[in-house]
Amino acid sequence: METNQSYQSLGPGFEPENQKKSRSIPVWIFVFLLITLAAVVVSMLRFPKVFSEYKVYRLAEERMEAGETSAALEDLMEVVERHPNSVPMIVKLIDLSMENGYYDSAAYIFNEYLVGKDLSDSQYYRMLDYSERLDTYYNTYDALDSLFMELNETLGDTPDEEAAERYMEELRNSLKDLLEDPSQDQTFILYYLSMYAETRKDSYSYIKQAYDREPEFFDVRVQLGNMARGLGNLDEAEMYLNEALAKDKEDSGALRGLAIVAMLRGDLEKGLDLAKQAYDLYADGTYVRDTYLVALHVNGCSEEEAAMITEIEELQGGLEDDTKELLADACTLQDYYMGE
Amino acid sequence: MIIPGFVISIVTFPGVIIHELAHQIFCMLCGMKIYEVKYFQPKNPCGYVIHEPSDRPLHVFLTAMGPFFINTILGMLILLPASIEILEFRDYTSYPLNLVLAWLGISILMHSFPSTGDAKVMVKQILKNPDVGIFWKVLAAPFVGLIYLFSIGSMFWLDLVYAMAVGMLLPNLLVHLF
Image (cartoon, rainbow over all chains, first blue to last red; front, side):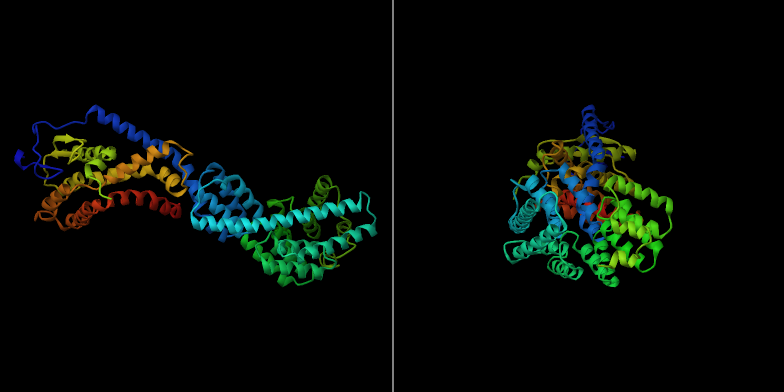
């Protein structure tokens, strides 16, 4: 090839100095290339971890829509702990926690990670709204705390039945008084009123009001489902419990509630399966062990039943009286789960 | 904001070096003689490779487009984790080396696109060459168009936009793929 026919990467105007030999790569370029390749290695070694964190951050909403609310929030919290200066991640975690009623988590992230960070205007005003909501929530939390302490002091250490009844009556009245105070968190008070209501019907009514006000509050769907079941409305119970499960498919309370509904409908096998799922996910959940025990009993799994009784006795101090009655076949499942 | 090209090249000099090295490596792979290489100089043009011509369209295409592939791949690999932490997490402190990696990755990506000189070679040796088949013309045409587009666009920071787009869009794409 003639010299004057050779071409260059930059077009005409650059004459080659020496066209006889081919230029090799100089040592300093090799060194430069090695440094660049070292940067590639460093980046690629870090990439899997950073990418998995990014997936947690990016896919949190999608996972929540797919019913992985608690797992998505837990994973996001872990990533925030590793990136305490990441404002978008902190803000996202607070957003999702607030939207899904995880107020304690939101407050923790607020205090631990958000304070002192620079926010955009829109983030700032949103956080201000959350802060007001959390203030109301914790005001009520404190009010309830002092209420219980006050009543416990009044009741003393060895309450008789009459004193206990008086305590409950006072508690209900105090909660109703608090409900009249607009500065208090109404949903929170309704939730507590439902727990201490005199009748199942009242409990249902209070928790339904709480649900109507704020369906994401605590485990209000599970409580509503359980109270509907207590009143014998199995379809309604199933609806709310499935709604809770759609929000979080690892909700042991919802699985336990559905196990009871299944057993009441006569599908004992399904009841056992659901009760076991609840037990495997969170054995320490409210009445999760008891429900699993009942499911084992009605399915005739005597060995596992005996083992579960031992476990409950060791961990919870013993079985409740009505559970003992059920295991002794002195009452039916309907009486146990739906009777007054 | 108008900043002279050579100033940008000085700031992003690793990209210029990799760009010229990519030209050189592809010349070597295609068995073409290299007469002169300037990896970097603080003036316009900030680097160049002068090599013998080839009448094989594959060789012409590879030597011209080499930097696009090499710079894009290297820049992407270096920038990915840093771009996630800096651009998405806005976390500048967890890993101090990130800023260096981001600078290196962006510098390399910004110099991915071959010069208009390379485009002219492809036009002459491939697009206007009656001996070259339609396959090579169809393959080369969009790349020639892109080179000219980026050459004009670099006045409006399109080279930086390309680097940032790789840094921001790729992680999003990967998240949905894996």
